[in-house]
Length: 434
Image 1 (cartoon, one colour):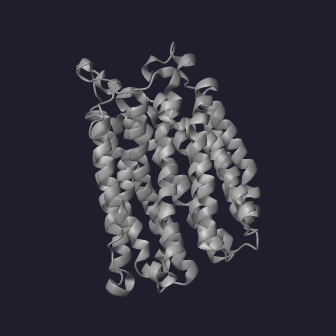
Image 2: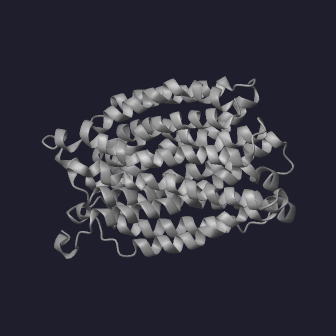
Image 3: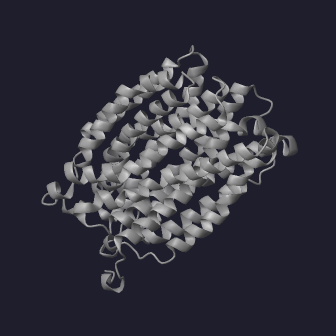
């Protein structure tokens, strides 16, 4: 057994801040690619395609990152369950940061031909691989240090990181869009956000260098030899249910932040600047409300909030596409805000909910695999499917609304089959899950 007394527990605000900063940096890397895919990667890397086909191809490389994320959760989950949560944070940040900087260095199709999109594909895969490990490590390190009665609150701070990373990534793109000409942005400006990832990765490594290991991991006497095999054998139903439950969150987020950006700029003629401001404003509100919703999860339970968020999402998807189709800033913002409020009602509590569903010995693998499989179902396919559906729609892409509503109903059914885990209710009957 590890000596748990050799590690001094950090203050929860410091640990939460370090986890938030780390996830913000890693998600900055991931999101900046999505913004570039919506705006410039199609013409630069798939110039022989039609505009629609080029956008679809760029979104396909975007989707590869989601396919890689479950593989990353398996790889880094194994490390997290065998060697500790802390090593995962360092290795995943290095991999994601290096591959993001490399994307900014890839020559375009006009320079090296078909090798250009192939390199893009490989680097996007490596990005996803690193991010697949990031979420599990950051969330578990925070959740396993937190007191049980406030676990939802403290573990929600890594969930704020994606909002910060998104605003940072799109803020850089917005500044470049305003200060550069279209020719300058297309020629070299789009690369700057990718190069900036190098400096952010160094900052993240410095922030994480002094974090202690999780006390829950140090208390485990018998670590799983093959965590994935144990998860597949004993928890396969739980993994499938959590993946299905989380699919709607990914679908909502990437419909708002990636597909709508491409749709409005290409089909509706809305300026890039207007779209980025509308989306960023809605994401800022979502990020600010994340700890608030997490506190409600500590008070009323994880599952009730997830069910409410799913139901709200199912009701809001048709209004979302209707408001987007106006092409007007205020209605579009309101559409995005309503969708992201439904999203945050669910995802604010997920960082406490998923770890509580799995026993500590396989928690890093089980929680991360379920979380990232949800990304494949909801995040990888949504920009591609929505773009294809919108192409065959009239002014209002009702098909996209129907698609998103269907995913919301699927997730609602999965959440309905999951148990509640709030510690004050289940401690007496589920000691293995804290």
